[in-house]
Length: 144
Image 1 (cartoon, rainbow, N blue to C red):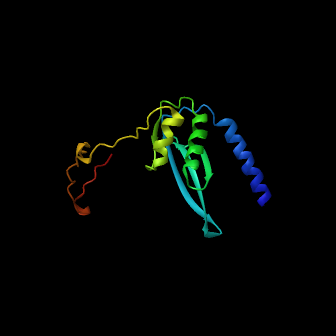
Image 2 (image 1 turned 60 degrees about the vertical axis):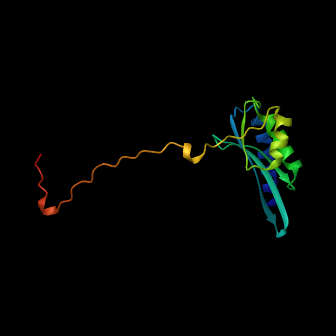
Image 3 (image 1 turned 120 degrees about the vertical axis):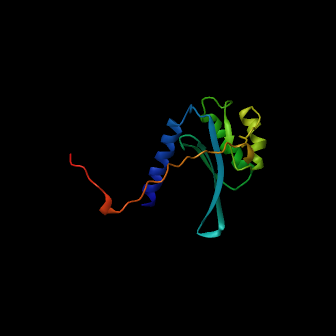
């Protein structure tokens, strides 16, 4: 089973490498997460870039959590994009994104800015008048 899993995994990776090229993406999400293998002392990190609109996984890189992991993720993602200069990058604020983004993508890292809570429009919800309640004995049905 392990041999089959490795074979299918390699095929999926080759297919993704072939097909995920010249992607038209405007907003990109990048994040890293960790897990462990066998014991919590063997931590593994993976970094992922995802198209914010479609949730398509653009690139995944694995390794120790350091600036090299973020650098590899950003460079591999850059190669897959059709227009990498017209991009909004959303991250968790890790400092490596801020330092690597201008070098790799050639533009300043300007994360999307959320307006202060006071500037958000207040939704106006109108509720209809409640329907009068009646007992079943008071309901008159018309014949059709």
